[in-house]
Amino acid sequence: MTLHCYKPGAGLSPILRPSTAELLAGNGPLLIDWVARHGSPVNLIWPEELQRNLAVLRGALRESGVTHAVYYGAKVNKSPGLLSAALRAGAGIDVSSLYELRDARRLGADGAQLVATGPAKTAAFHNELINCNALISVDSPEELEDLIRGLPAGGPVQPVLLRLRPANQAQSRFGMPAAAIRHCLSRIAGEGRLRFDGLHFHLSGYSWESRAQAIREAAGLLSESRAQGFAPRMIDIGGGLPIQYVDQRAYQAHLGAQMPEDYRTGKIPDSFYPYGGELSAAEWLRCLLSAPMADGRSFANYLVHEGLVLGMEPGRALADQAAISVFRVLRVKAVGPDAHVVFVEGSSFSACETWFGSEFLVDPILVPATSPPIAAKSIRGYLAGHSCLDEDVLSNRWLTFPIAPRAGDLLVYANTGGYQMDLLENEFHRHPMPSRLCVVQDVKGQLTLVPDTVGEAQCSAGP
Image (cartoon, rainbow, N blue to C red; front, side):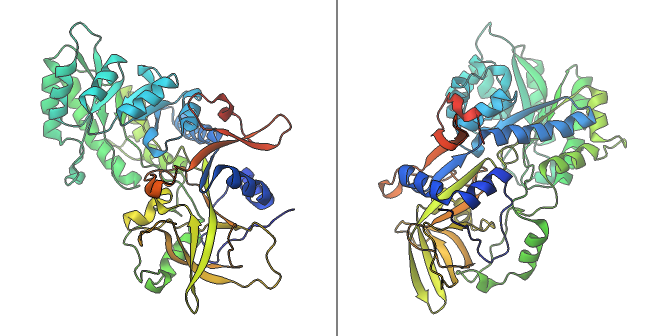
Protein backbone atom coordinates (compact mmCIF):
# COMPACT_ATOMS: atom_id res chain seq x y z
CA MET A 1 0.00 0.00 0.00
CA THR A 2 1.32 3.44 -0.92
CA LEU A 3 0.39 6.25 1.44
CA HIS A 4 0.73 9.90 0.56
CA CYS A 5 2.20 12.44 2.92
CA TYR A 6 0.47 15.73 3.67
CA LYS A 7 1.89 19.13 4.56
CA PRO A 8 0.12 21.63 6.84
CA GLY A 9 -0.96 24.82 5.16
CA ALA A 10 1.39 27.19 7.02
CA GLY A 11 3.66 27.75 4.02
CA LEU A 12 6.89 26.58 5.64
CA SER A 13 7.45 23.22 3.97
CA PRO A 14 10.93 21.85 4.64
CA ILE A 15 13.65 21.64 2.04
CA LEU A 16 14.33 17.92 1.65
CA ARG A 17 17.22 15.96 0.17
CA PRO A 18 15.87 13.80 -2.70
CA SER A 19 16.22 10.46 -0.93
CA THR A 20 14.49 11.80 2.19
CA ALA A 21 11.65 13.17 0.07
CA GLU A 22 11.35 9.77 -1.62
CA LEU A 23 11.28 7.99 1.74
CA LEU A 24 8.49 10.21 3.04
CA ALA A 25 6.46 10.18 -0.16
CA GLY A 26 6.56 6.50 -0.99
CA ASN A 27 7.39 4.48 2.11
CA GLY A 28 4.68 5.28 4.63
CA PRO A 29 4.21 1.64 5.68
CA LEU A 30 7.97 1.26 6.18
CA LEU A 31 8.06 4.30 8.46
CA ILE A 32 5.03 2.99 10.35
CA ASP A 33 6.83 -0.32 10.86
CA TRP A 34 10.05 1.35 12.01
CA VAL A 35 8.19 3.38 14.64
CA ALA A 36 6.26 0.29 15.77
CA ARG A 37 9.56 -1.53 16.33
CA HIS A 38 11.68 1.28 17.74
CA GLY A 39 9.21 3.56 19.48
CA SER A 40 8.18 7.18 19.16
CA PRO A 41 9.92 9.44 18.53
CA VAL A 42 12.59 7.79 16.44
CA ASN A 43 15.51 9.76 15.05
CA LEU A 44 16.80 8.61 11.67
CA ILE A 45 20.37 9.47 10.69
CA TRP A 46 22.18 9.68 7.33
CA PRO A 47 25.88 10.12 8.28
CA GLU A 48 26.95 10.41 4.64
CA GLU A 49 25.12 13.75 4.46
CA LEU A 50 27.70 15.18 6.86
CA GLN A 51 30.43 14.11 4.46
CA ARG A 52 28.64 15.78 1.55
CA ASN A 53 28.29 19.01 3.52
CA LEU A 54 31.95 18.88 4.48
CA ALA A 55 32.95 18.42 0.84
CA VAL A 56 30.94 21.49 -0.20
CA LEU A 57 32.61 23.68 2.45
CA ARG A 58 36.03 22.37 1.51
CA GLY A 59 35.26 23.20 -2.11
CA ALA A 60 34.66 26.84 -1.20
CA LEU A 61 37.92 26.90 0.76
CA ARG A 62 39.94 25.32 -2.03
CA GLU A 63 38.59 27.88 -4.49
CA SER A 64 40.24 30.60 -2.43
CA GLY A 65 43.50 28.72 -1.88
CA VAL A 66 43.11 28.89 1.89
CA THR A 67 44.71 26.24 4.07
CA HIS A 68 42.07 25.10 6.53
CA ALA A 69 41.21 22.89 9.48
CA VAL A 70 37.52 21.97 9.78
CA TYR A 71 36.42 20.46 13.10
CA TYR A 72 32.91 19.02 13.46
CA GLY A 73 31.22 20.56 16.52
CA ALA A 74 30.30 17.42 18.47
CA LYS A 75 27.87 19.31 20.72
CA VAL A 76 25.40 19.69 17.85
CA ASN A 77 24.28 16.05 18.04
CA LYS A 78 24.99 13.00 20.18
CA SER A 79 25.19 10.64 17.19
CA PRO A 80 28.40 8.56 17.10
CA GLY A 81 27.59 7.80 13.46
CA LEU A 82 28.00 11.48 12.62
CA LEU A 83 31.24 11.69 14.62
CA SER A 84 32.58 8.67 12.81
CA ALA A 85 31.56 10.07 9.42
CA ALA A 86 33.45 13.30 10.15
CA LEU A 87 36.60 11.40 11.08
CA ARG A 88 36.39 9.13 8.03
CA ALA A 89 36.16 12.23 5.84
CA GLY A 90 39.32 13.68 7.39
CA ALA A 91 37.66 16.34 9.55
CA GLY A 92 38.66 17.00 13.12
CA ILE A 93 36.34 17.06 16.12
CA ASP A 94 35.56 20.00 18.40
CA VAL A 95 34.94 18.62 21.88
CA SER A 96 33.39 20.68 24.66
CA SER A 97 33.40 18.12 27.47
CA LEU A 98 35.37 15.20 28.81
CA TYR A 99 32.65 12.88 27.51
CA GLU A 100 32.71 14.23 23.97
CA LEU A 101 36.49 13.83 24.06
CA ARG A 102 36.23 10.21 25.15
CA ASP A 103 33.67 9.44 22.45
CA ALA A 104 35.94 10.91 19.79
CA ARG A 105 38.93 8.99 21.13
CA ARG A 106 36.97 5.72 21.14
CA LEU A 107 36.23 6.31 17.46
CA GLY A 108 39.94 6.62 16.74
CA ALA A 109 40.60 10.38 16.88
CA ASP A 110 44.11 11.35 17.94
CA GLY A 111 45.15 14.62 19.50
CA ALA A 112 46.05 16.21 16.17
CA GLN A 113 42.39 15.83 15.11
CA LEU A 114 40.94 17.43 18.23
CA VAL A 115 40.29 20.96 19.43
CA ALA A 116 38.61 21.88 22.71
CA THR A 117 36.85 25.23 22.52
CA GLY A 118 34.41 25.10 25.44
CA PRO A 119 34.83 27.74 28.16
CA ALA A 120 34.25 25.67 31.31
CA LYS A 121 36.83 22.88 31.20
CA THR A 122 37.35 20.74 34.29
CA ALA A 123 40.74 19.63 35.57
CA ALA A 124 39.99 16.08 34.39
CA PHE A 125 39.10 17.39 30.92
CA HIS A 126 42.32 19.44 30.80
CA ASN A 127 44.31 16.39 31.88
CA GLU A 128 42.99 14.12 29.13
CA LEU A 129 43.42 16.86 26.53
CA ILE A 130 47.03 17.29 27.64
CA ASN A 131 47.62 13.53 27.57
CA CYS A 132 46.68 13.33 23.87
CA ASN A 133 48.24 16.74 23.03
CA ALA A 134 44.98 18.15 21.64
CA LEU A 135 44.69 21.80 20.66
CA ILE A 136 43.14 23.75 23.55
CA SER A 137 41.35 27.08 23.18
CA VAL A 138 41.97 28.98 26.41
CA ASP A 139 38.99 31.10 27.45
CA SER A 140 40.55 33.27 30.18
CA PRO A 141 43.72 34.09 32.10
CA GLU A 142 42.30 32.00 34.92
CA GLU A 143 41.99 28.97 32.66
CA LEU A 144 45.52 29.53 31.41
CA GLU A 145 46.82 29.33 34.99
CA ASP A 146 44.81 26.15 35.61
CA LEU A 147 46.24 24.64 32.43
CA ILE A 148 49.81 25.54 33.36
CA ARG A 149 49.40 23.92 36.78
CA GLY A 150 48.30 20.71 35.10
CA LEU A 151 51.17 20.47 32.61
CA PRO A 152 53.51 17.56 33.39
CA ALA A 153 57.22 18.19 33.73
CA GLY A 154 59.10 16.94 30.70
CA GLY A 155 55.96 16.46 28.62
CA PRO A 156 55.51 17.60 25.03
CA VAL A 157 54.87 21.27 24.29
CA GLN A 158 51.13 21.94 24.59
CA PRO A 159 49.52 23.86 21.68
CA VAL A 160 46.97 26.51 22.65
CA LEU A 161 44.71 29.08 21.06
CA LEU A 162 43.61 32.15 22.97
CA ARG A 163 39.89 32.90 22.73
CA LEU A 164 39.26 36.51 21.81
CA ARG A 165 36.20 38.43 22.95
CA PRO A 166 35.91 41.05 20.21
CA ALA A 167 35.25 44.66 21.17
CA ASN A 168 31.72 44.49 19.76
CA GLN A 169 30.89 41.53 22.06
CA ALA A 170 31.69 43.28 25.32
CA GLN A 171 28.69 41.80 27.18
CA SER A 172 29.61 38.20 26.39
CA ARG A 173 31.00 36.04 29.18
CA PHE A 174 33.10 34.08 26.69
CA GLY A 175 36.66 34.84 25.64
CA MET A 176 39.03 37.66 26.55
CA PRO A 177 39.37 41.30 25.53
CA ALA A 178 42.56 42.41 23.82
CA ALA A 179 44.26 43.44 27.07
CA ALA A 180 43.78 39.96 28.55
CA ILE A 181 45.08 38.38 25.34
CA ARG A 182 48.25 40.44 25.70
CA HIS A 183 48.58 39.37 29.35
CA CYS A 184 48.26 35.69 28.35
CA LEU A 185 50.89 36.12 25.64
CA SER A 186 53.32 37.47 28.24
CA ARG A 187 52.55 34.49 30.47
CA ILE A 188 53.08 32.02 27.61
CA ALA A 189 56.37 33.70 26.68
CA GLY A 190 57.72 32.80 30.11
CA GLU A 191 56.40 29.23 30.04
CA GLY A 192 58.37 26.86 27.84
CA ARG A 193 55.76 24.12 27.93
CA LEU A 194 53.16 26.08 25.91
CA ARG A 195 53.02 26.98 22.22
CA PHE A 196 50.82 29.84 21.04
CA ASP A 197 49.11 28.64 17.86
CA GLY A 198 46.77 31.58 17.26
CA LEU A 199 43.46 33.18 18.13
CA HIS A 200 39.96 31.75 18.30
CA PHE A 201 36.55 33.35 18.66
CA HIS A 202 33.00 32.05 18.54
CA LEU A 203 30.28 34.67 18.14
CA SER A 204 26.54 34.56 18.65
CA GLY A 205 24.32 35.06 15.62
CA TYR A 206 24.85 34.18 11.98
CA SER A 207 26.29 37.33 10.42
CA TRP A 208 29.46 36.92 8.38
CA GLU A 209 29.99 40.68 8.75
CA SER A 210 30.45 40.35 12.53
CA ARG A 211 33.04 37.64 11.92
CA ALA A 212 34.88 39.88 9.45
CA GLN A 213 35.04 42.61 12.09
CA ALA A 214 36.40 40.15 14.66
CA ILE A 215 38.98 38.87 12.16
CA ARG A 216 40.31 42.39 11.62
CA GLU A 217 40.74 42.77 15.38
CA ALA A 218 42.42 39.36 15.64
CA ALA A 219 44.80 40.21 12.79
CA GLY A 220 46.13 43.18 14.72
CA LEU A 221 46.80 41.05 17.79
CA LEU A 222 48.53 38.37 15.72
CA SER A 223 50.79 41.05 14.27
CA GLU A 224 51.65 42.16 17.79
CA SER A 225 52.42 38.58 18.80
CA ARG A 226 54.81 38.14 15.88
CA ALA A 227 56.67 41.26 16.96
CA GLN A 228 57.15 39.52 20.34
CA GLY A 229 58.68 36.46 18.72
CA PHE A 230 55.62 34.19 18.49
CA ALA A 231 54.81 32.25 15.31
CA PRO A 232 50.99 31.91 15.26
CA ARG A 233 49.59 29.60 12.59
CA MET A 234 45.80 29.89 12.86
CA ILE A 235 42.75 32.14 13.06
CA ASP A 236 39.78 30.08 14.22
CA ILE A 237 36.36 31.63 13.48
CA GLY A 238 34.28 29.10 15.46
CA GLY A 239 30.88 28.17 14.03
CA GLY A 240 27.64 29.90 13.17
CA LEU A 241 27.56 29.03 9.47
CA PRO A 242 23.85 29.15 8.57
CA ILE A 243 21.77 26.50 6.83
CA GLN A 244 18.51 26.82 4.92
CA TYR A 245 15.56 24.83 6.24
CA VAL A 246 12.79 26.37 4.13
CA ASP A 247 12.47 28.46 0.97
CA GLN A 248 13.73 32.00 1.52
CA ARG A 249 10.77 33.73 -0.13
CA ALA A 250 8.23 31.62 1.75
CA TYR A 251 10.06 32.33 5.00
CA GLN A 252 10.17 36.09 4.47
CA ALA A 253 6.50 36.09 3.49
CA HIS A 254 5.65 34.18 6.66
CA LEU A 255 7.58 36.59 8.89
CA GLY A 256 5.92 39.56 7.22
CA ALA A 257 2.41 38.17 7.52
CA GLN A 258 2.39 36.40 10.88
CA MET A 259 0.14 37.76 13.63
CA PRO A 260 -0.08 37.09 17.39
CA GLU A 261 -3.25 35.07 16.80
CA ASP A 262 -1.23 32.65 14.67
CA TYR A 263 0.13 31.27 17.94
CA ARG A 264 -1.89 29.58 20.65
CA THR A 265 -0.02 31.78 23.15
CA GLY A 266 -1.26 34.95 21.42
CA LYS A 267 2.35 36.11 21.16
CA ILE A 268 4.93 36.05 18.36
CA PRO A 269 8.31 34.87 19.68
CA ASP A 270 10.91 37.61 19.96
CA SER A 271 13.49 35.84 17.78
CA PHE A 272 13.94 32.89 15.45
CA TYR A 273 16.84 31.06 13.89
CA PRO A 274 17.06 32.28 10.24
CA TYR A 275 15.33 29.18 8.88
CA GLY A 276 14.93 30.69 5.43
CA GLY A 277 18.11 32.72 5.26
CA GLU A 278 19.52 34.20 2.09
CA LEU A 279 22.81 32.28 2.16
CA SER A 280 23.81 28.64 2.30
CA ALA A 281 26.80 27.75 4.49
CA ALA A 282 29.13 27.69 1.48
CA GLU A 283 27.84 31.03 0.16
CA TRP A 284 28.25 32.54 3.64
CA LEU A 285 31.83 31.28 3.76
CA ARG A 286 32.61 32.76 0.34
CA CYS A 287 31.30 36.14 1.53
CA LEU A 288 33.55 35.99 4.57
CA LEU A 289 36.61 34.99 2.55
CA SER A 290 35.99 37.96 0.24
CA ALA A 291 35.59 40.46 3.09
CA PRO A 292 38.20 43.25 3.10
CA MET A 293 40.90 43.50 5.73
CA ALA A 294 42.14 46.87 7.00
CA ASP A 295 44.71 47.10 4.20
CA GLY A 296 42.18 46.30 1.48
CA ARG A 297 43.22 42.69 0.92
CA SER A 298 40.51 40.06 1.07
CA PHE A 299 40.46 37.81 4.12
CA ALA A 300 41.44 34.88 1.88
CA ASN A 301 44.44 36.75 0.48
CA TYR A 302 45.46 37.79 3.99
CA LEU A 303 45.43 34.15 5.18
CA VAL A 304 47.44 32.96 2.19
CA HIS A 305 50.00 35.79 2.39
CA GLU A 306 50.44 35.41 6.16
CA GLY A 307 50.67 31.61 5.98
CA LEU A 308 47.74 31.14 8.35
CA VAL A 309 45.34 28.23 8.64
CA LEU A 310 41.63 29.04 8.79
CA GLY A 311 40.11 26.98 11.61
CA MET A 312 36.38 26.54 12.13
CA GLU A 313 33.94 24.40 14.11
CA PRO A 314 30.70 24.10 12.14
CA GLY A 315 28.07 21.94 13.78
CA ARG A 316 24.64 22.63 12.36
CA ALA A 317 26.13 23.32 8.90
CA LEU A 318 27.67 19.84 8.79
CA ALA A 319 24.53 18.14 10.14
CA ASP A 320 22.32 19.80 7.49
CA GLN A 321 19.82 17.22 6.10
CA ALA A 322 21.53 14.45 8.13
CA ALA A 323 18.50 13.53 10.27
CA ILE A 324 14.73 13.49 10.62
CA SER A 325 12.58 12.91 13.71
CA VAL A 326 9.42 10.85 13.47
CA PHE A 327 6.64 11.20 16.06
CA ARG A 328 3.53 9.02 16.28
CA VAL A 329 0.19 10.75 16.85
CA LEU A 330 -1.45 9.71 20.11
CA ARG A 331 -4.80 11.47 19.83
CA VAL A 332 -6.43 14.69 18.68
CA LYS A 333 -8.43 16.70 21.18
CA ALA A 334 -10.82 19.55 20.43
CA VAL A 335 -10.12 22.64 22.53
CA GLY A 336 -12.51 25.01 20.74
CA PRO A 337 -14.89 25.26 17.78
CA ASP A 338 -11.99 25.41 15.31
CA ALA A 339 -9.05 24.53 17.52
CA HIS A 340 -7.40 21.23 18.38
CA VAL A 341 -4.36 19.94 20.19
CA VAL A 342 -2.55 17.09 18.46
CA PHE A 343 -0.82 14.94 21.09
CA VAL A 344 2.22 12.96 19.98
CA GLU A 345 4.09 10.12 21.64
CA GLY A 346 7.17 12.05 22.63
CA SER A 347 7.95 15.42 24.11
CA SER A 348 9.27 18.82 23.20
CA PHE A 349 12.51 17.83 24.92
CA SER A 350 13.14 16.13 21.57
CA ALA A 351 12.03 19.22 19.61
CA CYS A 352 13.41 21.94 21.75
CA GLU A 353 12.83 25.41 20.31
CA THR A 354 9.72 26.21 22.37
CA TRP A 355 11.77 25.78 25.55
CA PHE A 356 13.86 28.76 24.41
CA GLY A 357 10.81 30.94 23.86
CA SER A 358 11.11 30.47 20.10
CA GLU A 359 9.64 28.15 17.48
CA PHE A 360 10.91 25.61 14.96
CA LEU A 361 9.57 27.38 11.87
CA VAL A 362 9.52 24.26 9.74
CA ASP A 363 6.20 22.53 9.12
CA PRO A 364 5.93 18.85 10.07
CA ILE A 365 4.86 16.35 7.42
CA LEU A 366 1.83 14.14 8.12
CA VAL A 367 2.17 10.49 7.07
CA PRO A 368 -1.15 8.64 7.58
CA ALA A 369 -1.03 5.13 8.97
CA THR A 370 -4.00 4.13 6.78
CA SER A 371 -5.76 5.67 3.83
CA PRO A 372 -7.78 8.65 5.11
CA PRO A 373 -11.57 8.73 4.70
CA ILE A 374 -12.77 10.10 1.38
CA ALA A 375 -14.60 12.90 3.17
CA ALA A 376 -11.67 13.80 5.41
CA LYS A 377 -11.73 17.45 6.46
CA SER A 378 -8.95 19.84 7.33
CA ILE A 379 -8.41 20.88 10.94
CA ARG A 380 -6.47 23.55 12.77
CA GLY A 381 -4.28 22.53 15.69
CA TYR A 382 -1.04 22.86 17.59
CA LEU A 383 1.30 20.05 18.64
CA ALA A 384 1.85 18.93 22.23
CA GLY A 385 3.93 16.26 23.91
CA HIS A 386 2.73 13.45 26.14
CA SER A 387 3.98 14.79 29.47
CA CYS A 388 2.01 16.41 32.27
CA LEU A 389 3.71 19.78 31.67
CA ASP A 390 1.58 22.50 30.13
CA GLU A 391 4.78 23.88 28.56
CA ASP A 392 5.42 20.61 26.72
CA VAL A 393 4.50 21.96 23.29
CA LEU A 394 6.32 21.10 20.06
CA SER A 395 4.62 23.87 18.09
CA ASN A 396 2.73 26.84 19.47
CA ARG A 397 1.86 27.82 15.91
CA TRP A 398 -1.61 26.96 14.71
CA LEU A 399 -1.13 24.49 11.86
CA THR A 400 -3.87 23.74 9.35
CA PHE A 401 -3.74 20.07 8.38
CA PRO A 402 -5.37 19.23 5.02
CA ILE A 403 -6.76 16.09 6.67
CA ALA A 404 -7.22 15.51 10.38
CA PRO A 405 -4.39 13.52 11.95
CA ARG A 406 -5.53 10.29 13.59
CA ALA A 407 -4.02 8.05 16.27
CA GLY A 408 -1.21 6.01 14.75
CA ASP A 409 -0.39 8.53 12.03
CA LEU A 410 3.12 9.94 11.89
CA LEU A 411 4.34 13.51 12.05
CA VAL A 412 7.80 13.94 10.62
CA TYR A 413 10.07 16.87 11.37
CA ALA A 414 12.79 17.20 8.74
CA ASN A 415 16.37 18.36 9.23
CA THR A 416 16.54 17.93 13.00
CA GLY A 417 20.21 16.93 13.20
CA GLY A 418 21.41 20.37 14.27
CA TYR A 419 20.64 20.68 18.01
CA GLN A 420 16.92 20.13 17.50
CA MET A 421 16.43 16.45 18.24
CA ASP A 422 18.55 15.72 21.30
CA LEU A 423 19.71 18.91 22.99
CA LEU A 424 17.23 18.53 25.89
CA GLU A 425 16.23 14.86 25.63
CA ASN A 426 15.72 13.10 28.94
CA GLU A 427 13.76 10.29 30.60
CA PHE A 428 10.98 12.39 32.12
CA HIS A 429 8.06 10.20 33.30
CA ARG A 430 10.56 7.31 32.89
CA HIS A 431 10.04 7.27 29.15
CA PRO A 432 13.19 5.83 27.53
CA MET A 433 15.44 7.99 25.41
CA PRO A 434 14.32 8.17 21.77
CA SER A 435 15.99 5.61 19.52
CA ARG A 436 18.57 6.90 17.06
CA LEU A 437 19.28 4.72 14.03
CA CYS A 438 21.16 5.01 10.73
CA VAL A 439 19.27 4.50 7.47
CA VAL A 440 21.21 2.25 5.07
CA GLN A 441 20.57 -0.06 2.13
CA ASP A 442 20.80 -3.81 2.60
CA VAL A 443 22.36 -6.20 0.07
CA LYS A 444 19.11 -6.15 -1.93
CA GLY A 445 19.08 -2.37 -2.08
CA GLN A 446 16.21 -2.10 0.39
CA LEU A 447 16.16 0.55 3.10
CA THR A 448 16.86 -0.77 6.56
CA LEU A 449 18.07 0.48 9.94
CA VAL A 450 21.23 -0.22 11.88
CA PRO A 451 22.13 0.97 15.40
CA ASP A 452 23.81 4.34 15.66
CA THR A 453 26.49 3.06 18.01
CA VAL A 454 30.16 3.73 18.52
CA GLY A 455 32.19 1.99 15.84
CA GLU A 456 29.13 0.97 13.81
CA ALA A 457 30.74 0.60 10.39
CA GLN A 458 27.41 0.05 8.68
CA CYS A 459 26.53 3.68 9.34
CA SER A 460 28.98 4.63 6.61
CA ALA A 461 26.60 3.34 3.93
CA GLY A 462 23.37 4.97 2.88
CA PRO A 463 20.66 5.18 0.25
